[in-house]
Image 1: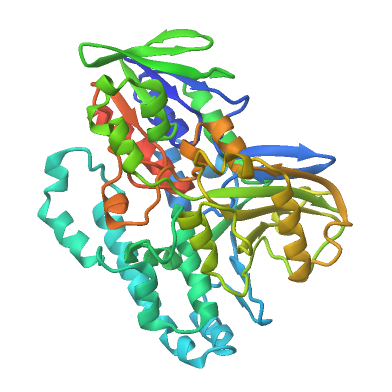
Image 2 (image 1 turned 30 degrees about the horizontal axis):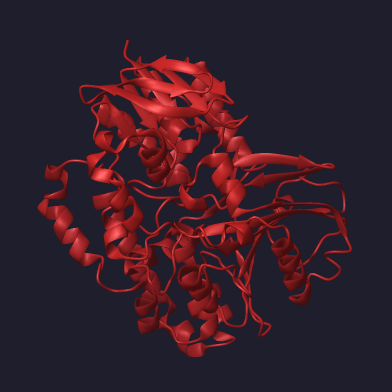
Length: 488
């Protein structure tokens, strides 16, 4: 029985652990935090329950695929329910659009501020579906860690067909002109840690993924998905060590031999790193162990955007809020200039609010709300670390929401906790505090991400920095794909 060490108990690492344990491998997961979940953690304060981290769940078929691959049913471990509508978008001109799979309803909502954009909506959604179908058939369900896979003529033809040289915002402008439409559809680029003005057009597939394939809530909170993964892993014999920070990946003659950690050394024939690839490379490997990820190459890769979160327990309920609500500022695009060019907190960002108590009873006391607020933020540099560690920005976000219509929000607070990019880096070893590892602000960083296979024999990577990308379903898929490659 081959021994495997998985570094990190995020969904990607848990997925790999489950898949390999079911195939007879001896798997130990080492996690530096006190609980599984990586960036997704459960926080409880004063009777309020929050999921800190990913909250928009899509592609449930990926999770079902993981469970069915080991002879289990997802529904026996966790319940997921489609949210309809999925996300409410609120604009400063007073208009609102509730995303729904009903195309006619979408056209009617958009037509209230732009009949011209409404007339183009179905055509755009056809293009969105085409991009998604191409990505799913050619890119998402296969690893690209070998030159033969990258040289596949079908893959090359597919790459050309998804417009790698066309920017996402440029594609949107072919269909739409109103600032509201451009903002609510452009925001999908932030789902991969990027700017809609810099990311390639491939991410126009995301509206189809969310609006047509559905947005889901998890009964009793998103963290239940982590708990389901962990329970399944333990049933299959996976061993967990929490509060155990790995300090080095060990090797001999270009092959991994295990890891060193602050709770001892562990021998293994295989090591799967679920942490950020760039942090893993810089902190756990010497340059001699990672020739394809030299310090120079790491420095050239642009990190993804980060996020500034506020967990707010509020002694009231707001009718304006759905499970997912986005408040857009008057000038949406300016925040990306602040984030990626000036490396500073945006003056007036879009604010995402997750009110999971809207659809999941028991997340807050009766008549109260558990609000998870998130604004995009820059990744850390030597100059902005102090700015990104402070609590004051959270208060600015609360005041901005009050001006947008959430009256007496500050006065109604029962509890509040900020979660900064600095804390994100400290807790999860996210490279420079970036949520998604590297940005997708160029075709190169989108289509040529760091490999799932390390330079050392027996070293593999899973998670958002590598293929197939960020987001809860895709990191889960990365764990499954790596496990298949190891056992092939």
